[in-house]
Image (cartoon, rainbow, N blue to C red):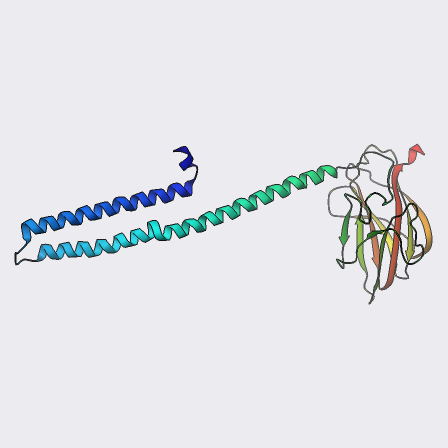
Length: 277
């Protein structure tokens, strides 16, 4: 009985079918009794009242029993099938949700805050993809993002070191200013005495430049660190002492553009303790 009770839908359907069979049995017995009484007590008499009662009961109860049949068996099967389908869809959606949550948990564990320094990213370990745990934040166009490439058509075509570099390049019409970010993983800088950021970059644009942002918490709000020059033809190194160190620290390399052709290059990013130099 426990197995049946575990399936509430099957149990509910079975109870309806049993109730209909009991009702049908009662219908047959009562009508049979009425006809027997009529046969032995009222057959041949001029008073047809009892016969009219029997016919009324038979007609009314027949309508009720037919309705009971449709609700308990015919239509109930369709409703049961629909309900089972709905429940299966909900169970499937629940399983998918659990799967995504579990996998999201695994991804999160792979992207725990970085605590080992010096830390360096030269874009060499993930092929032509942004490194693991880095993210994009395009403010304008989905197809205008930072990319990792192993060569480029303009100067400088080579990465600062190795084969790969991060590049964002496109030509735009109009004068409006827009942005696209390349965001680092989370760092735990709480135990770094003097956290310092260094990176190499190139900027080939009259109205585009690289802006460096940071945030020291998980809030969505960013703070400005510096804005680089608009026209840098060769690889140039920048060094910044990071303020407000915390156990949740991220840096965003923001490509800013205001029309025309924009080309920004980024390579060999490092975070280290300035006191250990």
